[in-house]
Every structure is written in structure tokens, then in C-alpha cells.
Image (tube, rainbow, N blue to C red):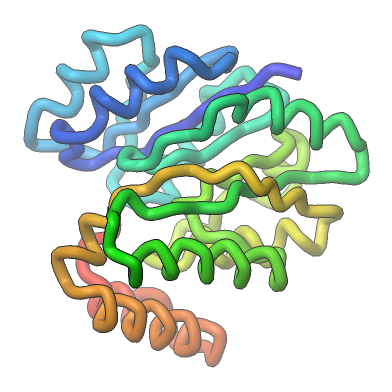
Amino acid sequence: MRLSIIIPVLNEERTIAATLADLDRVEAAEVIVVDGGSTDRTAESVRATSARLVVSPRGRAAQMNAGARQAAGDVLLFLHADTKLPAGASRDIRKCMADPRRVGGRFDIRLDSTRPLLRLVGRMISLRSRLTRVATGDQAIFVRRAVFERLGGFPEIPLMEDVAFSRALKKAGRIACLRARVTSSARRWEQHGPVRTILLMWVLKLLYLAGVPPTRLKRLYGEAR
């Protein structure tokens, strides 16, 4: 079972080198970085590694779909540029995907902050995802390639592509909720304030589920990376 890791990036020169270096310990068939038109040194940082660089029109969903089209793996894992996989991630994925009834899955999450509130936020995201079987992109969603193609990939909308894809994925079969935790950057939470960010995330999800177009939600969220 070959694993392809796909990372969409946009102006991530501060994070991408460390993320790729961390992936050296992950047994993956390939790592594909999809640049959506960075104006900093992101592309140069990627070219200095063994990862494959793909250029795509901007938009996280479009970038992830472009990476998937180039991937050779049987299982595709979509990773944010500021998120690190836990030790043994590839082993855990292969073990759970040995069950043919499972179509994909995600990891629990921790935020890289010592603030108690943000530690709690990570636990609550993991619990909510475990109960609903719907993941967000910072939980390192993985999926069988054949299932991904059958579902048509990520819907190319400006926001909530991860939630939309997760909702479609859980209808396709069993979802693995791995207890191993990815470590994701708390930068957005720290920059805008934990309480404000929590409220914004909940409002956006509720509005999306109520049918508000993602183009309108994107204006509330700002640049999502």
C-alpha cells in the first residue's frame, strides 16, 4: 500500500522547510507540494528537498486536486504546510486501511501552544470529529485513491472544502479516527485570539450547513492557509 502525501502551499517559506524535513521519517512513496503562486521563497525551499513541486492555480481545493492527479499512491494524505504528522503515521494508516471497508480517515489534533485554552481546543476538535466522522483539513485527511477519484476530489470552493469532502467521504464507507495526534500551528488562533477564532469557526460552519455560499464565507474568514 503506497502512501502519497500532498501539501498545498501559498507563501509558506517560514514553515515548509521544517515540515518537509519532518516528513523524512515518514514512510511515504512520495511527497508532492502544490504551490498556488507563492511570491516568497516557498518554491525555492521545496526544490532544495526531495519533494516534488507542482504548480497549480490558487485555491486549496484546486491545489490538492492537482496534487492528487500527479500522485502515484494507493492512499492519498492531504497535509497542511504548518502541520506535522505523529511518529508512526504511515504504519497507523496502513494498519487501519488493511480493512477494505474503510475508505479513509483522519488523526486527532493538538495545537502547538502551551496555553490551556488552546490545548482544550485541540481536544474538542478531535472529539467533535470523532462523534461526527467529519474532519477538518488540519487533521491530515487520508483517503483511498480510488474512492477520492470516485467522489470527484475536493469540491473547488473557496472555503469548507474539507468539511464538504468529509461529509461525502463518510457516506462512501467507514472512517478511521486515529488517536495519534498531528501537531498543527496555533498561529491563526494566537494572531486573532482564541475566543474570537472559536466563535468565528463555529459561525462559519453553521452558516455553511445552513446553505450560505462559501464565496460569502470566505470574505469572513480571510486568507485560509
